[in-house]
Image 1 (cartoon, one colour):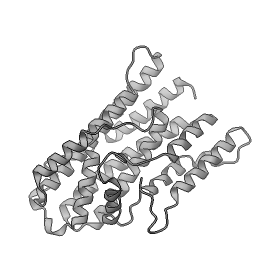
Image 2: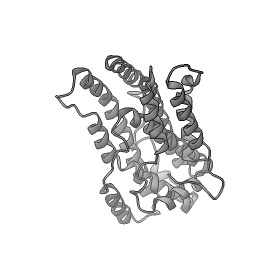
Image 3: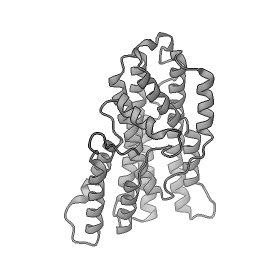
Image 4: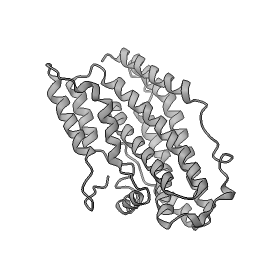
Length: 289
């Protein structure tokens, strides 16, 4: 795919998203009746899972920094590359603003329950955000693969937790977050299809690598990540991050037709790698990532 064609594709993805969703949203302060929260309806497991989700979302300064660096407007780059990066940043600024709103809304909710030590929560947040975040890839296409999976997994978690909790205000909060994550996921899926148009063998290899090494954000960074991850799955029955790999499978589905060119083997390898990641481990043997 030529750089000029990629620029047009990225511009189309960004315009399509912003035309549909620029003004959609909700207010973190006025759209939820925090004073009506019934904290007694929350289990300790649910509250703990919500706290973990908030800490992951609250690392947005690190995530934003990584994406700003990925699309840095270095004046030494070719004009078409600079134009492509600037187009992507129109989305990135909107996306990271949404994610910051998620983190702040979850924090506001958790504090409003009255069931946590607020000073302890603040300390935990400072420790978590103080840990450096390193983007898993330097390649924009691989980051698109990573973010499709991550956003979908997050959307599934919020949806499953929403269905599991009885506290009505939290249901509303999680519904709003879930819809945002679904919109974000849709953008990155469209972007991935743009990157994969007229792909070469190296493109499939990069996607396969991104799939094989995928880990959820803050894996290996957040304290007690494994325990927290298990608790999130138990608090939100039906949730498993592996479900998100199905979307990658669908995004690449049209490339699964029989081919006679040199891309066939690489594509088959990729689809087989996806099948391996999609299959959930047996009960009691869940891989945490």
